[in-house]
Length: 440
Image 1 (cartoon, rainbow, N blue to C red):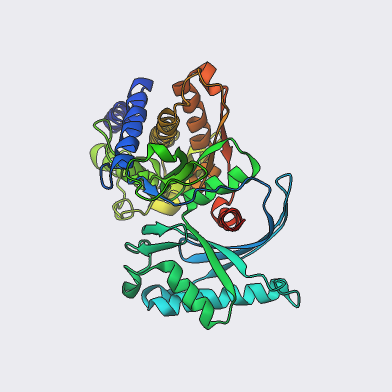
Image 2 (image 1 turned 90 degrees about the vertical axis):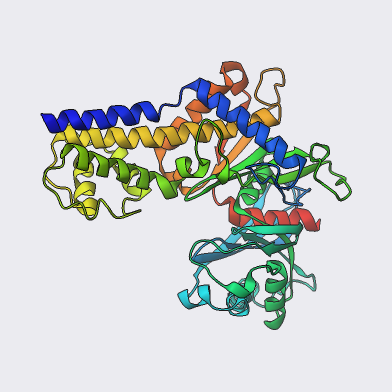
């Protein structure tokens, strides 16, 4: 009984410390909106980078012709060919292929990596087009590159640093578009890079093609980010001439946002960290209460050993005796012979952590609507938020909680005109669509 009481105390403390009442979330949303304004005011003026994407023309659904997309964001990349019908938001066809990057190229040289990518792109083009080459027209390519870049124009940007498993030193500080363009030239591939974007901008563009009321593209996956459409005259740090269109897509880079109400945003809301937070709580539970019995804690002490898909599986377990929870504890952490009460406690821990993440995610989205003045019921204009990423797509309770919390924060009247859409595969097709809108 002492073990159960000790465990209950740990869970009660977690519940209290992870509480996200609506008042706190509204503070987070308004802090986000304030930081957005500060980031637009001057470079480096905010915890949210608010980078200019230089995308000032988004797809309208009237684009027509063949366009290509290249999506490089991790250990795989994808190449796509999209045939647009020119009216009624019609994608005639979309072919794609995924290619795994050989590990030695991730730490080799820039020319080796881009040479490999250009080679695969060339093969894809040759197979797709066969004898029917592009009728003498230069092929247009949109490039989604999900690493930190300092954007110089819509089709140029220098690499700030690699993340994930990449460490190609000679590419840092170089223009990634120029590197790709050079590599394609060496392959004899006649293709022009029309735009360099990231996955959040791609998600926004992919959804905007079908629906002109889309105002933001948001990623909740391994990491998190957002891009939205801002009025060009609301960007004091903009130095060039204002675009004819009057709007500019801003890549927020909001992962590092923090406020007096919460530590770093991405650490609380993204798939990379949720499993790790639960692992730490379970370790504390084991050490402070002994509720798992005399177990070897070595797996439980291994950082990032418990992943977000594991906690999602446990959280969604609907078997009467929580059999899936028992399986995951056994397979992943070598915790066996748990009681049903203990397994219920584990589910509750997953619930507390995932729901806090989803509620904070909703607060970020509310912050964007606040900044755009679309969070009240004065303006009945329809606002669509397109969301992509594995966490949003596969973790049902996270998605449902995000959607219901957004409704709670906006209130009944305002939430009637706000729509959350799952935008599948924005980063791939979005790149090709931006190449289309830029070139037409």
